[in-house]
Image (tube, rainbow, N blue to C red; front, side, top):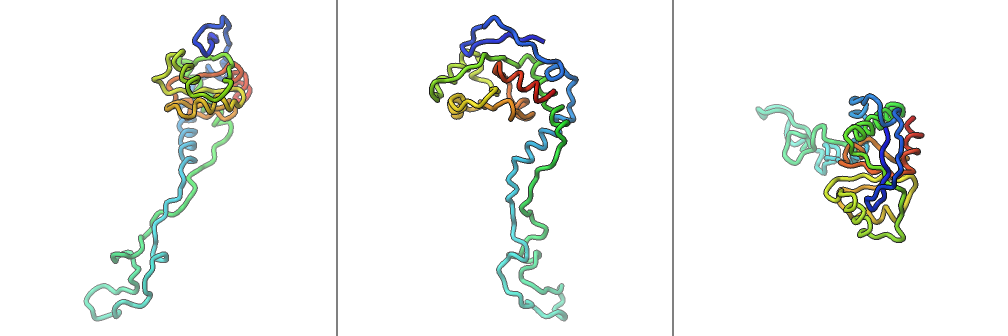
Amino acid sequence: MEIAVIKNSGEDTGRKVKLSKAVFGIEPNDHAIYLDVKQFLASQRQGTHKSKERADITGSTRKIKKQKGTGTARAGSIKSPIFRGGGRAFGPRPRDYDFKLNKKLKAVARRSALTYKAKDKSLVILEDFNFESPKTKDFVNVLNSLSLSDKKTLLVLGDQSNNVYLSSRNIPNTKVVTADSLNTYDVLNAESLLLSESSVEKIENLLK
C-alpha cells in the first residue's frame, strides 16, 4: 500500500511512502484490541477510593447493651455496620487496576488498530516539520490546511519535538506522541491519524 506524502501546508510533495503489509495490512484481531484497550484504561485509574470500615470509625468500644433479655438482637459495638454512623462492610479499598499483557499481544493489537486506520483511509503521511518556537496558532494553521480542525487527531512524530508538542497542548481533541509511545487506544480514539514521514519506519521496526 502506497500513500502520498503531503506537506503541513496541505500541498502534495510528489513522493509516496510504501506501508508494510506486516504492520498496516494484517487481518485485524479484535480480541487483542479489546484486551489492550482494557489494560490501557485500567492502568489510567487512580484506584485511591477508600471508605471507612468499622476499624476506621471513631467510637466507644464498650458493649452498648446487655447480651440477653432485651428482646432484640445482640450488639457488641456502636461501630457495627448495621448502625447509623457505623463502618461500611466490605467497602472499597485502594488498589491497582493494572494487569499484565504479553508484548506480542500488544503488538498485534497495535498492528490491528493501524490496519483499521489504513483500511478506513483515515491515515495521513506528513512531511517532517518543526516550528521555530511554540505557537498554538502555527499548529491550528496546520490542522486548517489539512481540513482537520473539526476532527479528533493524533500526530505521531519520529522523534520528540518540544515546539510541536507545546504548540498542540492547548488544542482540544488533538494529541501529539512519538512513535515509541504509540498505543492502541490513542490510535482508535482518533478520527484521523497523522504520521510524520520519519515515524513510519520507526513504527514498522517496532511492530514487525
